[in-house]
Image 1 (cartoon, one colour):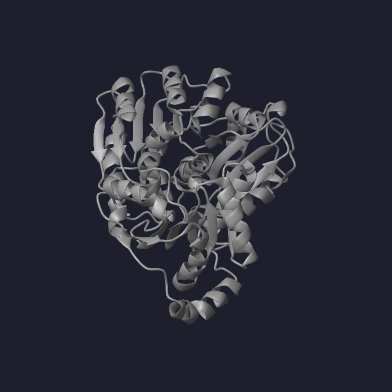
Image 2 (cartoon, rainbow, N blue to C red):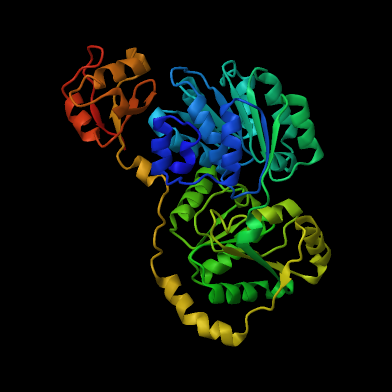
Length: 476
């Protein structure tokens, strides 16, 4: 923890970082955290895979006041998957400070989000459209907001969200800290920073991905792509791989063909039901299948450990997407490989990408029949083997936590202080052993920390809260 000790963080944050195995700050973390802790505006230019989320989540978790019930920080992300991931990161980093984070995005129950926002919430993470919707309807209160983070700002621009982002900014208190992060700084993003930020500190982190990623190009014809893909995957035989297609139809077609060929695979694109999208990402992160066939919604900010190979089945539509695709591999200091398939018609697009990244992409030949034949048995063996599930970085932080359910909430006039006051009086329990408390209309959920959940559960079966005896059991 020596690296993070220099930031003068609270014991609760340091305990969470230790559990999450954060040992040495990345370059972006080392530069952003001290400035953010001084509550100064920041424009951060940094490629994906640089540890950016923790760079803004650590100071936010450190600076928000637990006592305040209304949101103090708003984090805008371009995709729903990224919103869900950032919310989890904030909860894990703020775990021992009992920081409550909520994710709000489209294609998910508006009413459920409204109920969540009614409860004590410190940090809200969301996509611009749904955030603006909640602000307009008065269900997201922004009068106490102290921090605004605009994450992946260049993608907000590409996806046409910039007007919504501006409308959100105009609705927020002017006295706030604003942090903007972007892999590139096009003119519109520069204008945002000039117009809405107070003398921001510019932090530019060199492209970290180039050193760790070997990227290659194979020339092929459209009709030969599938056989080329099979040859590449047999020879490379990765544990975890993302295959990018340009369109949703392309994803569906390729997924069907790979499934038929007995690949351990699943698919991800924007027309899928939101719950399915999140479930697929969760399974991929856990290592339940090896190949994810996806559109570019999987290219932004999604953090999956140990992806050793990224394949662009179709050349991406723009330069930034190329950078973000290859940025799914070679993360956290590990090396990775990215291979792009290009047809003769796409020569000029490839040249534009090379100009943009400032280097030539090395051309290679497709594997020979002999290479494929030699590698085939090891590939088949791996396909038929049960995948080894990946270590969850939050496991250590969450392992001593038990979530308890009580059958009473707001309708019984119960408040957070009632639960804290009662539970903290149990012999051997202090307020430090009580985590996030979520009070709903007819139910309350309480996280008990430090391995003391069973002790609290046993005691609360015979203890009243505010004179009421509630049913209590482990939350499902």
